[in-house]
Image (cartoon, rainbow, N blue to C red; front, side, top):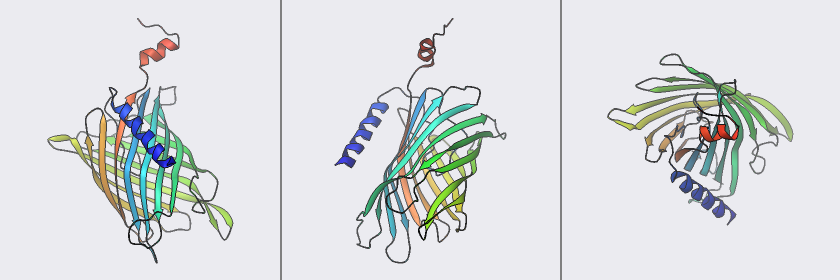
Length: 284
């Protein structure tokens, strides 16, 4: 019942936002990594994953997970001498089935990948000169059971983006701490993160973009996990972007396959003039 109320609240929020006059969203769904861009000052952006599925084959019952919803909230702030920047909050609600019963039967539901970041654009490039950004923050453990040792992890990323007329290209590299528990001993390991995104508008149908991503991670003393993703993004009406993608793992330790679909919505929460008037500034 509580989960149903949460989903209804999220639906009402999206309906309310979509009724507003909104600028074009800068969607970065359905990717794992990110881009060297942020929401404009006083702009709020909601990346809402409507449905996600991951399947990992393993000895015994497979690990099947359904993600609904996944949320990423971005709020842009004015430049205060440290570059354009935004606040990022995100989390994923997932249902897990690790029992071999044929049909999906969830054993666990939990929030995972819960995090808060500050993302800053330090340099805005043009053509083959890339824009450069950083994303720094904390991942807070909200998973149930022993899937993650208690204690927040730090994550830092450096992102470069090339915004070209015929395509957009993003590259991400970074690292994080990774808390784990083995034989009741708590251990902190280094985690390496990497990925690249290619976004190509469909000729003659510029509202449709074909997208692809290679992403991965490597935890110290563990094998690399990496995957390929391919999909489509449609820049729809009312400043809403819709996306759908599938992905597959490239190693035995990675997820075998999965899919995701969602929508991105953005809106100005306050006009610049109103903000400046509240701060006592005058206009010509």
